Image (tube, rainbow, N blue to C red):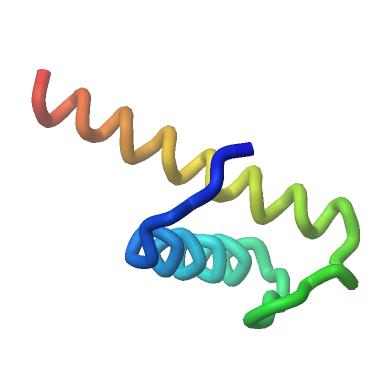
Length: 64
């Protein structure tokens, strides 16, 4: 797994993750979240991927 060495990128990803968690109704807290179920964690990851795909599709539509 790649190590994220850019503090701004890490902060942006954390913000993105928190937003995605809120959108799927998962109460995510700063720091350790090992008490999440696999379903909750998967919902957050799935929402993040969905948003990234939507962003990419929109960029293609607007630039193509």
